[in-house]
Image (cartoon, rainbow, N blue to C red; front, side, top):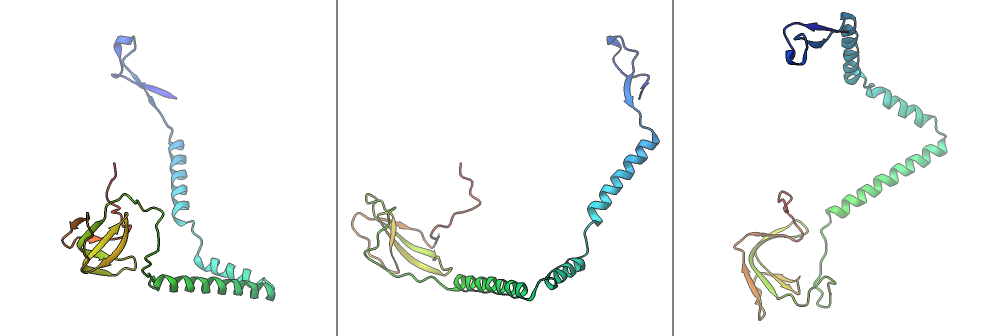
Length: 176
């Protein structure tokens, strides 16, 4: 159902100077408005109250036999204890000991020794210590201390208090 308005269109194509304009009846517009209002109403006000969810959970729990309730309670208790144990291990600081015989499979034997001096060190356990030196041999950390003597052919990097952290990557940096 289209009607044409005069004064518009392309006269060079043999037209009469009009373009088709869609015509909607008032009934269609009213129906479309009612559908849009119904969708908005359902989107915002369709949530069920929280109380009914709680009531459903209670009724579901009470419908279980006593053995099933005990089994469910034991399962919940075991899950809670496992979560608390995980929290305790997260709070515990890692224990690291120096081992001269320890080898790293990723070590590069041809890598020259590197001494990083006067660094602010953020350790893996969250502690921060200033003015520390880090000795890298074969590409792995061999020693951390205050006053480390550089081995021969060692590259010394003076960082002047800048931060050094194991495995910390700047998440904002865009790698191209």
